[in-house]
Each structure stands twice: as C-alpha cells, then as structure tokens.
Length: 89
Length: 167
Length: 118
Image 1 (cartoon, rainbow over the protein chains, first blue to last red):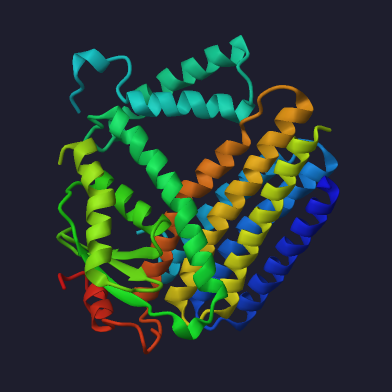
Image 2: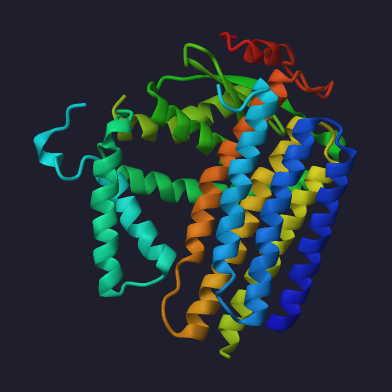
C-alpha cells in the first residue's frame, strides 16, 4: 500500500511541476514567473522527500532543507530586484 | 543598548530558546554532547549579536501565545480546504477584492505577525501596508461580505495579538 | 509493518500530494496574478505539512527513535510562505500588474500602491 501511495504522490507532484513549468513559460509577467519558480522549489522539496521515503534513508533531509532556504532567499532577492532594480541600496 | 540586569547573560531569551531547539532538531538528537553544544551556541550567538537587536515589544502572555499558535494552525487547515474548493471550482464564480483593514496594533513585530497570519489563513493575502502603519491592504480570493471579513480578522487574530504584546 | 501506520502514512502522503497538485493547478488556471498568488501559498503549505508529517511518522517507526527534524522544514515553510506571498503581492502592486476587471474596489489598489490611507 505504501509503495502505491508513493507512486501516486510522485505522479501528482510531477504533474504539478509540469503545470508550474507551463506557468513559467507563458508568464505573462515577471512576478508570475517568480511565483512559478517559488512553487517549483517547494514541489521539488516534496519530490526529494518522496524519494527519501521510497529509498528508506534520511540522507536527503539536508538537501530538502537547503532547497527550502535557497528557494526563499532567491525568491526574496528576485522580488527585491524587480521591485527596486537594485539589490544593495 | 541597555539590557536589564536580569538578562545580562541571556540578552534575547526567546532567540536563545529557538537556537537551542533548532540546533537539536537539525542534528535530530538529544545526545549530551549536542545538548552542551546547543547550550553554548544559544548563549554565545545572542551575546555576539544582541548589539544588532531591534527592540520589539515582548510577549506578556505565554499561554495566550500558545493558544494563538494552535488556533492559527487549526485555521490554516480549514482555510486550505476552503481555498482548495475555490481553486477547483469554476473561476468565473470567484469574486476577488481588495480590502483595507484598519489596524489598532502598533510596532513592527505584531503587525508582521498579523500580516503573516492573514496571509496564511482566511483566503486572503496581505499586499501592502500604508505608510503610517494604520491600514493593511489585503487581497481576498472570494469576498462574500466585507464587514464580516474585517470583523473576523479584528476579533479572531488582532485581539489576541494585542493581548499578547499589550499594545 | 503495522497496518495502521502504513495506512496513516499512505493517506497523509496522497492527501499532501493532492494539495500540492491543487496549488499548482490554481497557479496554472486562475485568471490574474493576485488570484494565482492564493493557490501556491496556501494549498502548497498544507500539502507539504501533510507529507512531512507522514515522513516523521514513517522514519520514527522505521528507525525506532523519535525523528523530528522534518518538522524544521515544515516550520521554515510556514514562516517563509506568507513572507514570499507578501513580497510578491507588493512587487505586483508596484509593477501595476493587470487586475481582473470584476475585482471589487479596484481603486483601492492604487491607494495601496502609493501607501496612502484609503
């Protein structure tokens, strides 16, 4: 049952990633693309987590945490950049 | 910056507690060595960085805080189901709106917490705050009743925050 | 493996994945930026929360000791999601992004952009 659940969950997360990619391509504005990227970060954390569960290790926890942190920082930096046109004032 | 003599060694007690817990969670252990290291970090880092600390109103009622956190987590679950139903449903039926919410609380930390709570819970996202920090502009996904929404935010989220921070 | 633990973990994983999927679906199908912003910030947060709790339960059961470090990711996402949403909404406001015509009180967005009182 667990392996089926993992397959179903992975499929759903992959479809979500494709939907995000579609939004990333069609835009239409820059904030839209940043939002799509941010959602992709979070979905990839979900994917890593599912891979960790299916392979039965906790090694991937650090990777997930790093992606979460880098995702937040880069989203904040990109927002600030297109808001002000400058990162360091 | 002046610190009260009671907290000479721990200038930021809450930050110290947070550092301690996060270090133990990061290492996923309660081994004695890590307890000592976590305690050392929890004391040393606030001592080094307290000069950069921006004074904020402190928490006066820990139990109200705990209840507030639990209430917000419960509301997040409920609000998520609502938003999920709205997202799956037809987009034509949505009635998005901008609403200005008058703020009674002051200071940056309580307003930040209120804005974050509003973003996470009842189908709203906080977008901007007026320059004098008296109005919070939020975007609502599906507005049914403006007065009701403002009353909900003011009663359910703002009042406990005022109680917690006494402002 | 204990049947109940497997059931709970499976249900949490699938529910979490469904929420993540709904978040992305909203991102893809909703009509304007502000409405799109709602779906990923909310649905994805709960979805990730469900999946991380499933991971906590499973790892705790498999390894035989309480493993809580996944909660750190949940906490981090819970804190950063509203901040990200706020920054994106602010960016969109100041970039004068197109707002859906039926949005009530469109004039308010102009006041918000100038950070004035309504």
